[in-house]
Image (spheres, chains in turn green, purple, blue, red):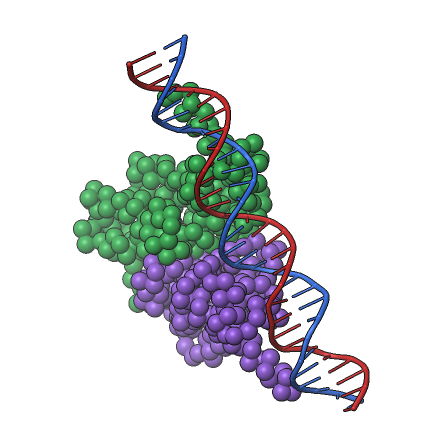
Length: 210
Length: 210
DNA sequence: CCTAAACACTGACCGCGGGTCATTGACTTG
DNA sequence: CAAGTCAATGACCCGCGGTCAGTGTTTAGG
């Protein structure tokens, strides 16, 4: 990497971190691109050298939050319920550590129609949610879940839970505690949901609901 | 009501309905206030005679969607599980009938911090969700649920479920079927969640999870 | 070591769109 | 019929996202 490229990397990074902290402080809509560039001593145009749109900052956050979660969850030892609980916990920790304003903007982006610009982490990507899908598929492959497990349905259901939590967290101005919530969900609901699909003995008897 | 007031009512209504259909067609961000007013043959300023901000259109939708849901759910005969399932179904029907773009914008608004402008149906209002709270309190009063029922916790939990569904519905571009989802939730999860709080005999044995 | 190409960076500029407000003129009231 | 009310107007303001031709420094190659 040449000296020039190094400086460029640094500039990009500076814009990104400055943007995050400003957005977190004042809210996405209340921070202009010029606020960001002024705060790190570069010209407005420089922002657009590194990011196509103002919103791309959020996709970058997203990548940071989740880059490790699915890897760690895969490596996590334990039952499938424990693994999923771990994943959920990691997911919500990623989001909450990012900050509520960034989370808000992510939700705003993610609900946009799929053909909108910036599809990578908004729209389809987040909805399909490769992390979780791969993770469940692996569980089937590893014999933790039955071959007949409707992975797609479960992914939808779990995404619905996660997005519900995120939305409530945003609405409550972070008074809602996702950690507690995940714990509750993992203990009371997750076993019931998974019971019919867990590959062998344990926790099946739980599932007799009408 | 004078002739003048009648005309004003009509103007307001025309702006509202035109706005809804334009937003639904093109997306909230892609419809300007001038698009709306031009489409119903009035001046731009007229919009602001009736609505403080562009976003207020959404709050109005919101009111329309839910005005009947809680009343109908209260009157609905049956077990508490059935009543709640009915409410959930009504809620999601209200949202989906409104249309996906309006729903998207509602979510965007609703996750804003509470002190933002237009608090009525955004922010706190939606989070506290009087409908659901009142409804559960009534159930306690009517003896359908135990006195010790943690109403607030349950409301949070249910809101989380509802917002999760809404978000998934928006993300999936309406391919996700909320009706089916509510049915599934009502049948498999709701009884387990409510079991410890249902006032007497039925469905308590279900709740033995670790 | 020099020159030409590459390229990070600049900031004036554009256009759009949300929101305002002094003004108008039709209707209402007494 | 006169005075007051008020729905409606549309020119105007301004902030902001995004663009692009230009600049000066670095890099690569001869």
